[in-house]
Amino acid sequence: MAGTYFFNKGVILDAVRMGLEDAIEEAADAVAADAKQRAPIRKVFKETKGYRRKQRDLTDVERNLAIKRSTAYYANDEFRMRRSIAHLRYYAKVRLHDNKSANNADVSRKARQVGIIKAGRFKASEQNAGTFRNRLGGFEPGPVLKSKLTSRGKYEVRSGRAVHLAESPRGTQFNVQIGGALKASIGPTPVHETGNGVEAEVEAAIRYAKFVEFPTIHNAAQPFLLPALAQERTRFAHRVANAIKKNLGG
Image (cartoon, helix red, strand yellow):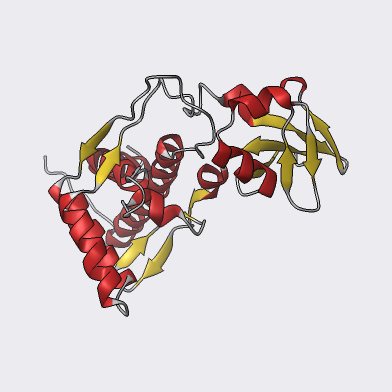
């Protein structure tokens, strides 16, 4: 007895395309979530006596990417380009995540919460009692918080550079916190078609993100997007296979 099987090419191709789009969307969401976890938060607190930052050298891939970015950034300024490239080749470092740092997001979480704004009125948290300078966007810290801040930290809090208004999920109030703007700016774009196919992007939509991701002559790098992307690459093929199988009814 012979069996005859029919396959609808259009249905199969549509399922593959939909599966690929679903996988790309899932991957972009995963990269964004991972990057948010890795992204550093503004350093404003005094470290304990004897604390030393942990750093490592750049890998060849990191160094080459940084040099390529610097070359493009200083395309019209040869002196700064040469100085930047020399630094990247011989001196640049990557700062490692450190759970013992006073500026670690988990360690300093309570100190960073300075209050809330609800119905247009500011209420300071008890441990950080101070005044929110709404017109300037800054916060005048109370004595307890002030004793924990570095001189630079005090300036950045008072000027508003380090103050971030995080909207609550319901949108009825804002949490006033020190740092967090970089983390909040990270997110994926919708899946869309390009000349090369279908893609989605993950971006950190804040001006100074590139100076955190890559080293400069002033600061060590604290990469967050590239490591998150590298981590997702190891899972993407499996993610695509599962999505296509699901759309084919498997």
